[in-house]
Length: 168
Image (cartoon, rainbow, N blue to C red; front, side, top):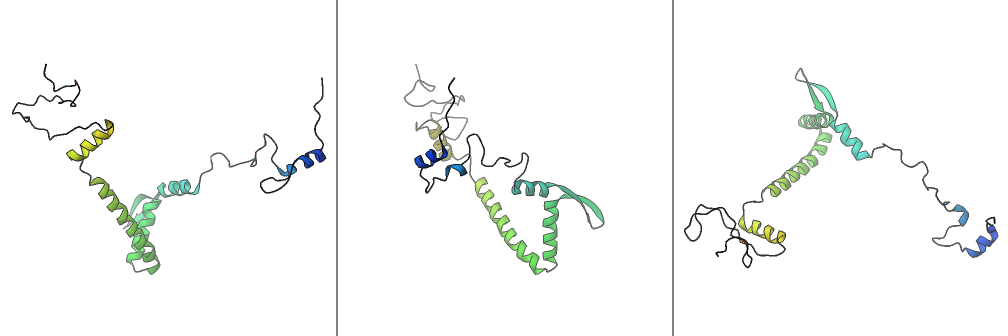
């Protein structure tokens, strides 16, 4: 059995040129060895997750002589509003931008909710997208169709196909 002969360090140095993007061989990571051996501990949370969890945790507060259970986020906002109402300028400076951001978020939600899902033009465009461009005309539902006959509830079909609406 032949032994693996490892090249001499001097031979490696002669064959490998150190430069930009080419660190010295002795400082490079060894095969199979991580650059961050201990790494991030399992189960550690980022700051956003920790903040969200803490703001959602519940605390007991006394308000007007009665005890209530609120989330820490609700208690913080309540205190921010109360101190601002008492005239504390520092709290007012914190509250006003928060109020503007909340108003903007509510306005955006109202714009999203303002879409009329019964609009025939909107529905036709959506159906056309799902039908890969085949043109479909949607009409308002009624109990009588265009020819004066009572509607049967069947789909009129797509023109140019054998689906529904055709006569034998």
